[in-house]
Length: 271
Image (cartoon, rainbow, N blue to C red; front, side, top):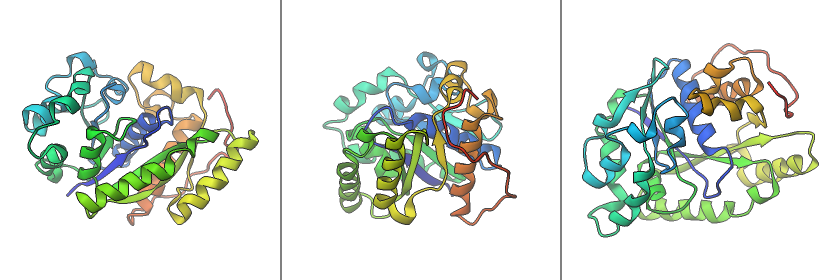
């Protein structure tokens, strides 16, 4: 039975989609049947794995609005154990169309329940907002991972977002919990990044992931080729960091892998 993980942060531009795509890809590479659900109307997770989002039909919009089975939207990716349920701009209208709908906060939860037996992990890429799409994702999830950019504004709104998570937990989803935070776009040469790292570590405590995702050109380039970082450049610092993140994620669930040598400096690097 799949564990459902929402990748969420109300702030945009923090590496949320990059984290969702590459965590899901790493989990698949490590042998886990994984489904990535794109709940962002921008559809970047969909196109970032090589799909034409304009032609991804049916998609998650049809699941939420027309109640078609999620199974009908699931497509295999170019990674053997990774499947995708995609989205596109149509999803932007879903929040308006669902305003008066019955069980509007539970549409995704009901759809996911029918496919849980097929997967080990279901990763949901959430939009950068606290609207109905995000509420549907949080109502469906067992855990939330919050990507935090290594810059000053990343801390703003974090308490507000975790407060919103508490409200969803109390009102809709008692099992919901914050798995932890992960630092993204990190450059250890910047004093500010290190200050943010210290503040975020204090905020999350033991829930903070030790893995840190560096600012890395290859990570920025990969989506343009419709590939995860592992397909685009498996030797890059970005690939090493996301694989370390996935291994740490799995270690929290009792799955362990032989240690791999890691580069020690988390700095901006062209590879």
